[in-house]
Length: 317
Ligand code: FES
Image (cartoon, rainbow, N blue to C red; front, side, top):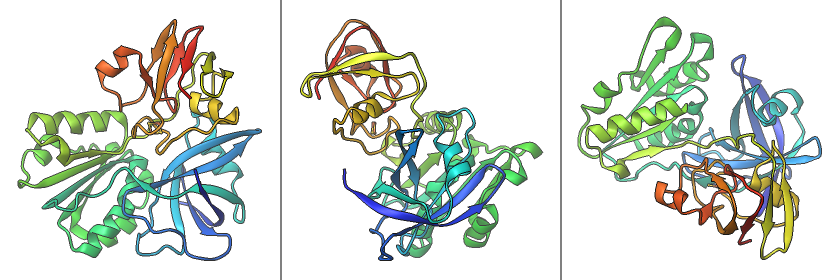
């Protein structure tokens, strides 16, 4: 996958847990165009191992002189966010992928309802720039734990005015999804990005109110889970690889020098799908792309997040 060479131009501590990073092209030229909701994948070299983490672009798509991302520090993760917080400094150089949009705004929507939980606000920052530019009808519903954790709330207040509705958990404010989704004009689209419980609730309430499935948009990239080590065999590359406990299958395949396809690296897009040629054990599917029937068939696997518990797993790559 082709990449862009960038360097860190600025770092801002937004809340105690969130940092905002600004990247510019090393040669000073403009970056590729993107649309609201796009993400890039950043390669981080941590302890001799390459981590590739997806982050939503937050800046205005009108301004490609820089890319902006925000990272929430996750202590119990595999280290990518902690590395970004503790080790990345202004001037450091990185390789990032070209922007891809798996969370785009529906062009024909009559109204847009954006629902964010915590750091899930990031893809909406660029979407709001697009919606404001288009003069579109939208509402942003933003839930966060406490006033000090409402990253970008002030900035959003200035941009969105009375379109912004904040829900602060520590003062008992709750977003009532039934009220919100039960009373919208036909042609409205809803978008959600946040913790799993929030995404599941939005999907359920929308389904109960009979929202068309293609009017409900989710952005949910999962972090590859830590698990037991296991071995895989790559049929076309003729390699046998150990997948360590804290590495995804996709990362292990890449570390072995085998090129593999990906877009989200979070179990959402389906791009990394591999055919399972043989296995003698259980596939541990963690993605939310494959259907239950596909998962049960043991014929396909998403190596960016899924794992296996077996002695033999022969993959078509
Ligand atoms: S890269 Fe998107 S599902 Fe694996």
